[in-house]
Image: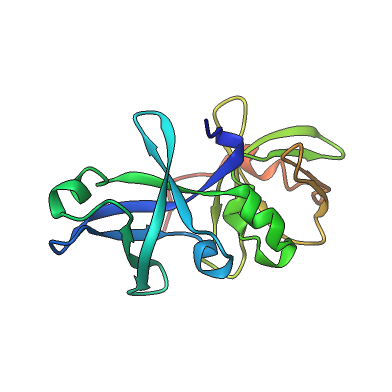
Length: 184
């Protein structure tokens, strides 16, 4: 049985494409193209199920058409609509640090050397040049932490934790009250 800690999310199957079982795949990490992985792991009814990749072709830098082994019709492909797609961590670990993407760190615990436990990395914002870890706090709030080498002191892949030393005052930014109205 595949466990959640053995995989990490790389995208989502959208809908069937054509009549031969191809699927539109929106991905946040192209690790499947950079390492020698021959299967995806799909989350079906709460269970992680592996599916071998027959072939794929890119449509853009974030979408591909994927043909899974045994999925040979549009009807069968419809079963994968909006299914989350994961990739085995073991392939990434074999490839080494150079092949890691930011999404690999989703689910990692984040600790600051001064403030202690900050929360769990829930997502990574790569929309701008300044990449941000979106850390889910225990109180339900979110914290945006810059993914800068100078702030990251250590990464423990086995324990799934990141140790950071954030600049003084950065953690207090979300506590500052801002006025929503502007006066002209």
